[in-house]
Image (cartoon, rainbow, N blue to C red):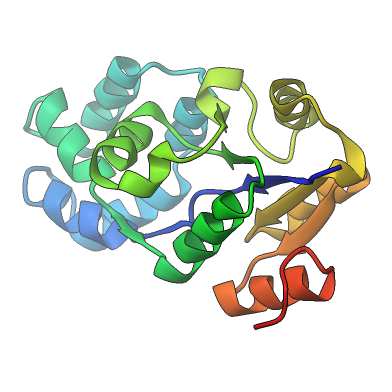
Length: 203
């Protein structure tokens, strides 16, 4: 049976840099960029937002209280989400897999502001069979519920799934379910693994 490919989004298909958002938000808030970078990267508010426990408006309101942001939600959202750049090697690898007829899905711990931005600005994002996002499921990787949601969406389980993610704990949770997993470090290394597994031919 043809395997199904499951792609993480951040650090696999797109890179991201919170310093970009921190610098822009700091210019309109009471916090310095360094403080904002730490806040955006580690605040429990972000986990609550990406787990679906906070709506976009509730997340924005909580951030305003925390950092003294002086702009509106639209302005904040533009700064907060515009942190992504494509990773061309992985996008090319995905395109090759699609040409070869492999189904593919995106599987991401993320939020609706980020997804709105990526969907609008990166054409590759449209070329997947489905999408599982933590904020919609109400659970983040590596919790079992989000893996169960992916299995239900694609209708496959175990070794039929080939899963790429840059975080070891997320990969471990997939491997525990019998998924074939690749701890993604570079597109070249991932391609080499798929060639070794004879999923892709040698060039």
